Image (tube, rainbow, N blue to C red; front, side):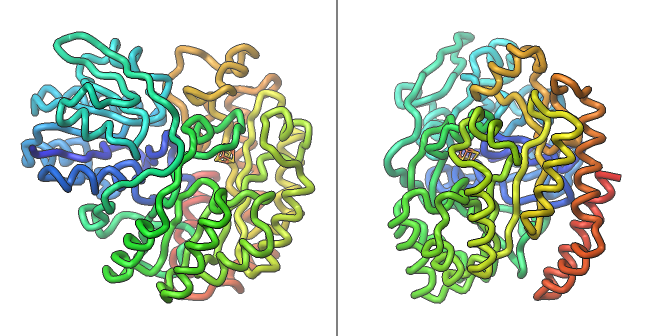
Length: 459
Ligand code: SF4
C-alpha cells in the first residue's frame, strides 16, 4: 500500500504531537514524535511518504498538491486541539480528493474518539498510542488486532478500549531519513543537525493537569535505543532532543544508557526532561558524561499547596535542590511553569516570575493551563466553571488562553503571560549571562533568532 504520514498545514507553527498540541512559543519546531516512531513500522511494510507541511511551511494548496501526487491508499495524520478547525477542513478535503481512509492521532480525540468520529464523517479511525500496533492495524484493516482505538467501517463506529502502556515496547527503527532535512529547529541545540528520539513512552506520575500521565508508562530496550543512536551518528546527527517526559524513571536503565553512550563515544550533545526529585547527583553526572548539556524540569508554581493539590509529587524545596544539583553537575537548566490554573491571580503570576528568577534557571517556559481531554484537571475545570465542555480548540503555548481563572479573564491571562516572559527574559543581567554562556556559532544564531521570535510573539 501507499501510506502517507501527514502533519497537516497550518496558519502558524503548530506542534501537534504526543497528545499535547500548541503553537511554538518562539520559532522552535522539533520532529513530530508520533509520526517519527510510527515511520519505522509503517515503512517496513508499505511504501511510505512523510509530508510534514508545518516543517516545510507549505500552504494548504501546496500540501494538498503534494499529497495528491503521491496517490495514497491510506493517510495517517496528526491533528491538534490547537488547530482543530483548520485540520478538519483540510482533512475533509483530502478524504474527498483521494478517497483514502484517514486515521488520526491527537489530543483533540484523546477522550476516546467516538464523539469525534460521530461528528466528522471524513474520519475513518483514531488511535490512542503510537507505540503499539494500532496505526498499522488500522491501515491494514486488521480491526481484530486493535488495542485502543475507534474505527468506522461501513458506517458503524466501533470503540476498542485498551490498557494503558506498561512494561516494555519495541518498535522498528524510526525512519529519520523520511523526514525533511530542513525546517526543524530546537532551542537548546548547540550544534546541528539535531534529531528527536524517544527512549520511553508516557509517564507513571499522576499530575492531574498533564495528559502524559494518562498514557501509562513503558520503556524501550536500551539496545534498541543504542541501535538508533548509532544510526543517527552515521547520518551525521550531532544533537538530540531526548523527548522522554522524565528521563531516568527506571534508574538502572537510564544509567546503563548513559554509560553506553559515553563508552561508545557517540558524542551527541543532548537535552531532556527530568524530575528534580529523581535527578540525584549520580544521575546528573552520568547524563553530563553522556553528553547531556541541558535539563528541563517541571517547576509549575512556587505554591506548595497547589503542587500538592495537583498531585505533582514534590514541593518547592525539592525543586530548589534539583536546580542546584543540576547547575553543580554543569548542566543548563530550563524550568517549565504552568500559569492560569483556576486559583491563579495577578499576584500569584508575579510571584511565579520572581520564583523563576530566584531559581537562576537558564531558560523559563511559561505554559498556560489547558483542560486537556482525558485529564482529571479537565473535570475539575469544568466543575469550577472555567472550562467549556464543548470547546475543542485550545493552545497550551498560550498564544491564546484556553480558559479564564476564577478571577482573571482570558484576555488578562494572555497579557499577564506575555508580561511574565518579558520580565524574565529582558533583564540586562540575564541577557549578559546568556551571551557569555554561548559556546558555538550555531548556538549564537539560534539563540538570537529564537529570542527575537519569542519577543515578537510576546510584545
Ligand atoms: S511528571 Fe511530568 S510528564 Fe509525568 S505526569 Fe507529571 S507533568 Fe506529566
